[in-house]
Image (cartoon, rainbow, N blue to C red; front, side, top):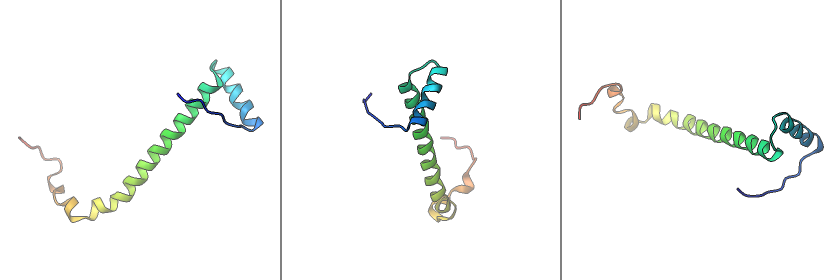
Amino acid sequence: MNRTQIILDNETHKKLKRIAKLEKRSLSDLVREILSKDLAERERQALSDAARLLLVDYQTDAELIAFTSLDGDDFNV
């Protein structure tokens, strides 16, 4: 882990301290969890956006759809 310092407005700090106290955990642990969840959501959204951009190509590019008639077929190798 890396140590870092952030400046929070008073209201945000109070809310975070209250939640941490209710959950019997440190403020640092709570902030790490919140950041981790936000970063995971941003990554999920970025992947979703990339997939959405590629969908048009996937549906229309002849080289990509050449074998779609085989989708679902079982192959015996």
